[in-house]
Image (cartoon, rainbow, N blue to C red):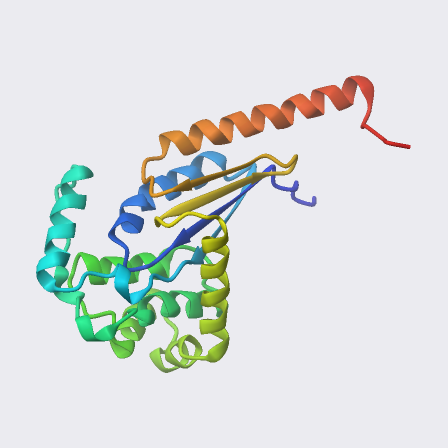
Length: 224
């Protein structure tokens, strides 16, 4: 039997090395568990500019104390990954995207990379370290992952999805774009809690059900 078309499409824009994106992972998982039968889910990379990263280890530590406290986290993030000379820290996000292009389309690689960097302090701003983490998560040889992640095609894809993110006219990651099949659209930027996302999903599904009820009683609208 052919699977039913999704009622809502949800796109999650993220930067692998963003602490707020890592804090949003439970919300993303909860959405998939709750609405997996009626929605499609995809994640895309929204690269940060070099200026958006901390300028020093001290500033990185300050950010982690702030975000960790705001999220009531029992575990402090680790600034050991941070090396100012890395600039945009491309390897982590491009490695996740490279693995995705090789068929690992779930959340496992980018979560492994984020946890390795932000909690274990591994220097995943370095290509060889990011490749080793991704290889352990996937079983794909590091050399294959490295070649794919460093390819012009993967960088171009990351730049395209970053431009999509910017076109939403938001600046904070994570960002969630919810689009229903009847044209409803909602964007959340910077929120990491699941409750507003669930409320919006339920509102969209109610609207879809209303359209279906009308069509059942009066037929689909035709301008001809």
